[in-house]
Image (cartoon, rainbow, N blue to C red):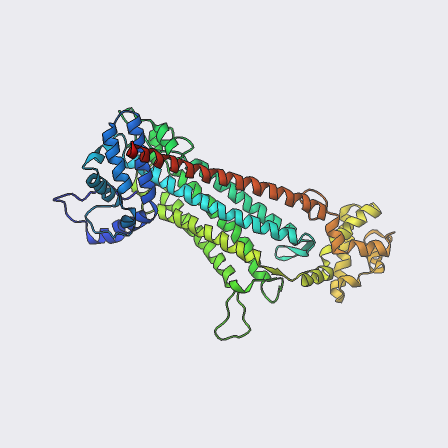
Length: 501
C-alpha cells in the first residue's frame, strides 16, 4: 500500500513538491491501476465479517455496503494525485465516509493499514501469477505440438558449442519444455505461499475485538492464514520467492531464445521465423530480421533485472512493517510478472509458426563426424573391446581423416583396421555393412532407447508424459481461477442480498 505516515487533514501542510514527484504521485498512479479493486474486495470481506461477528449492526453494515457498491471506481482509476489526500487509501476512505454518512468510519474496526496492505499486495500478485502461469502453459502446449511434429527430424546436438552427437529436434525441444515445466512448478509453489491471508493481524498483534481471521480469508479466496501476526505484516519472502522464480524462468528461457536466434542465421540456416514476427532493413533489401525473438531475449533480461531489484531492495531491511517492501518495491515484481506473461505469449506464437529446414539438418547430420560415438560403442559390442580402447581406435581414425581432408563418408574398413593395428596390434572383424550402419545418424538415434533418449519409441513415451503433465497443470490453473472467481461472486452476492432485504 501507499506510504502511510502522513494523511492530509485540515491544517496540515501540503507535502513537499519533490516528495510528491519522487514518491507520492508515482505510488498513487500505481495504486489506482493495480490496487484499487483488491482494496475494495478487502473492504467488502472485512465488512461481512464484522457484521457476522456482531461488531456492526445490520443498519451500519447496509450503509457501508451501499457506499462500497456506489463508489465510482472508474473515476478513481482516472484520477490524478492532487495532494488533498496522501494516497489512494485515504481518498477511498474519504469517499466511503461521504457515501455512507460517516457510517464507514467503523469499517476500520479490528484491522490496520499493515495487514490490509499486505493482503492487497498478495491478491494483486496472485492474480498476476496465475496470468503468467497461464501464458507459460500456452507456450508449453506450443512447444509440445512442435516436438510432436519433429520426432523424426535429426539434428546435431552441441556441447561446448561444438558438434557432439545426433539427436532429434523433438528431443531438444522436449528438454526445453521440461525446463519450462520446472519454472511453472516454482511459480505454483510461489502462488501457494503468496495466497495466504494477513487480515486480522492488524498492526502486528491482532485485535482485542472478536474478529474472525478465517472468515475473511475464506471470503477473499485465500487458501489459509499467515499464522503469526507479526510474520503476517513483516515477512516479505512471499514476494521474494516470486521474484526468484520469475528471475530463474527468464534466465532459463533466455538460453533457448539465444539458440533460436542462432538457428535463424544464414550460417545455421535451420529456422525461419514467420513474416508477422520479422522486420526488414531500411537500407538492405535482403534483410529479414527476426527481431521479435531479439525483443524476447532483451525483455527476458529486463525481467531478470526487475526481479533482482526486488531481492536487492529487500536485502538488509528490518524484519518488520516497513515501506521498503511496499510502494517502491512491489511494482518491480508486477512488472517482471507482466513482462514474462507477454513474452510467453509472444514466443508461443513464434513457435507455432516457426519453419524448420529439415533438408539442411539431414544433410549436416549425414556429413558430420558426430556419429562416431556409436562406432566406438559398436566396437565394444562386436569386438569385445574396452570402451577406452575402442575410443582410442576411433579417435585415431577421425584425426587422420580430418588431417587428410576426408569426410565421414570417406571412412573405410581399411582405415579403421589401420587405426586398430596401430592401437591394438591386430585388425578388427567388423564388416563394411556394420561400419556404415554405425555411422548412420538415424541408427544412432534409433538405438538410444534408454529412458530420456531420442529414439522414436522413447520420445513417444516422453511426449505422452509431457501431455499428461500439461493437462494436469491446466487443471490446476482452471481450479484456482474458478476458486477466485467464485469467491468474488459470492462476496458481492452477500452485499447485494443485504440491499434487497
